[in-house]
Image 1 (cartoon, rainbow over the protein chains, first blue to last red):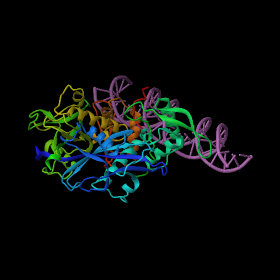
Image 2: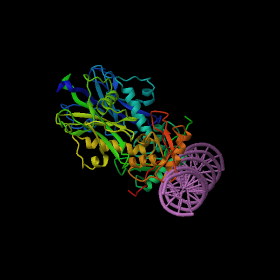
Image 3: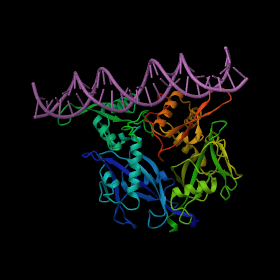
Length: 236
Length: 236
DNA sequence: GAAATAGTGTCTCTGAGACATTATTGG
DNA sequence: CCAATAATGTCTCAGAGACACTATTTC
């Protein structure tokens, strides 16, 4: 049996919105074992018949609970990178997941930290293996889904304002989004029972108070809008 | 090294449009080895450090060329199923790809055949492992992309008519599509250089001849439309 | 009351979709 | 000429997007 096998892991790209900068950040875990012991990398677990997981999804859950100690609001498989070069131990594959966290989530441990996604994708922060690439691909998945689903709302506070939602969408897409369009989308989601107006208000330092909404997803699969928020068709 | 490893494979869900019925069909391969020797299953290859592939994508290419002996027009990774139950040999994973073929492609061998996707998804045709599920998930990926991209055109003949394109889109989506909308989409693709009017005509048995177009993709990534062909928002 | 910010209303534009009209073939 | 089918044009509708205007707070 051994001759037919390969090294496999599940890695998590867990994202949150930095409450101050409104930029996307990714959760990193300080590796306890070689290779790359002590370096910051994506949290993940090895999978095989000897680890406790019966499925890949269970392994992803275990990576979140054991390593990250955070229950994500959203978790989906993005893809699998497998090749002969990514791990010094030989041919290996990583099935990587996108996890979305609320902005109030803290690292809360010496083993964990959040770093800006931009610095990871821009290679200013270099991660071991091909983890820079995995972060980039997971963010691309998020961006493409943010165009036509409510996925960004999983990054907003539990009770959110229109501005919170706008910040989340813009962080995912990487470009500014029309305020009116977003309001109409929220209005539609409210009509369909996906968000609720709590009736309460948030009182900023200045200006009119903001309505507080609550995200009440009706299904595992995200809410789908039938038109996109694509920036513009550039004459490619 | 052996204790940390797992059985991994790449499997291909290769689809074509049946030229007569205009229904989606999936390519099957008669298994040469146990388990499930002699049964019809998805074509695939084992991956590990001893097989000749340096990457998963290379393994997918090898599965197409060695087993299916067909060069697909489009090939993309859909996901990875991994668990303790899907293979009698133990914990295993399959990274599965969606491949799109032209309608003129024939099985051309005793080892290969095409069967209707509907009978696979409906479990009238039972495949080994979890291959029924893999076919279903790949078709769902195709359907969701057909809503807002040109992916169905990879299933149409090289020189296609509007009706060919319509049949392809409808087969992917599983519901009827507005003729005017599709025409406008083709018009837009023509303006952007993604399809070309050959100037030639197809002469059916009766009626006005049909313009013949040619698909001339400008990139690996599909053409993206900014509104969907979703059937209607049902009051969920 | 002024500044600041949130929320509403209105208008335009684009593309989906329904449908009528015109065009081009074979019999 | 008629049947059959393709191609074109017209109108409606919904949602993105721009922007003016109104509302509600703090200082």
